[in-house]
Image (cartoon, rainbow, N blue to C red; front, side):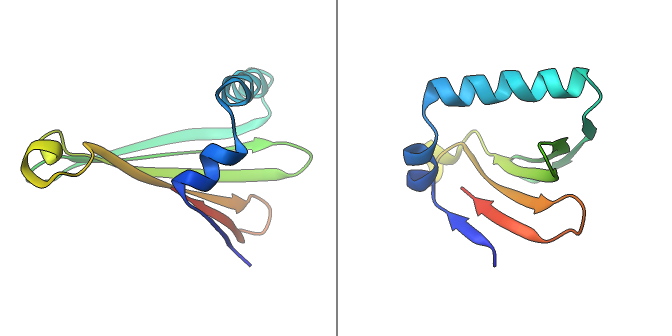
Length: 103
C-alpha cells in the first residue's frame, strides 16, 4: 500500500531541525558509500522547466526517492500558483514497491 502525504502532513511530521539533521545524515551516508548514485534530469517547457532528481540510501534497508519539480517563475503573477511545485516518490530499493508519494 502506498502512503499519500500532503504538504500539511509532511510539515506536521518533519520539523525544520529534524529536516536539517536528516539532510546532514544523508550526505554523511553518501560520503560513506551507502547511497545509490544520484541522477538529475532537466527538461525545458514553454513557460518553465521540469527537474527530476533521484538517489537512494541504505537505512537498514535500501530506499530510493525521486523528486519531480516544476519551476515556472511567472506562475504567481500569471496564474496565482506557486513558482515551484513538486512531488516526491519513495520506493523500496530492493523490490521497487512504492512506499509513499509526498507533496
